[in-house]
Length: 116
Image 1 (cartoon, rainbow, N blue to C red):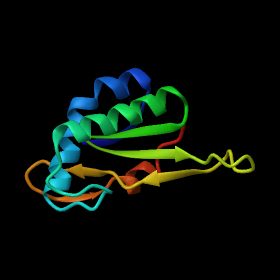
Image 2: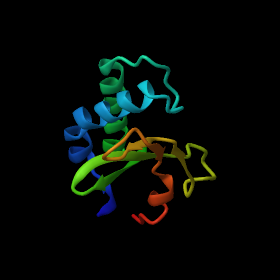
Image 3: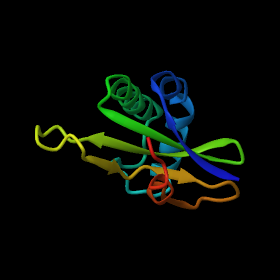
Image 4: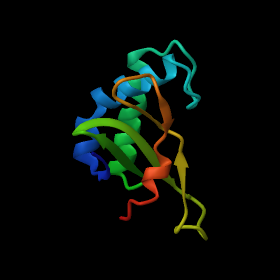
């Protein structure tokens, strides 16, 4: 069973090790998500620390995808900073890893069902 949920600041911070593992695995197997292989684990950890800080500061939303109870991917929504566009956010093309293979795909298709 798969589901998507919004992570708050505490959940974002506690998920950093798993999120970093997913990001490194995806980048190192060819996912095009703003990083180049080989990706250092510390680079991924630092990236998700910054995301968690932005979630805590209300600048981003972090959606997590779970497959059979295992955290498997993310979508990050960055809010617009323009004064006349507080209703807008841009999705960052994060990835997911599926059990049983190297398959990668954006989680954004699932995220559109998340309301918050």
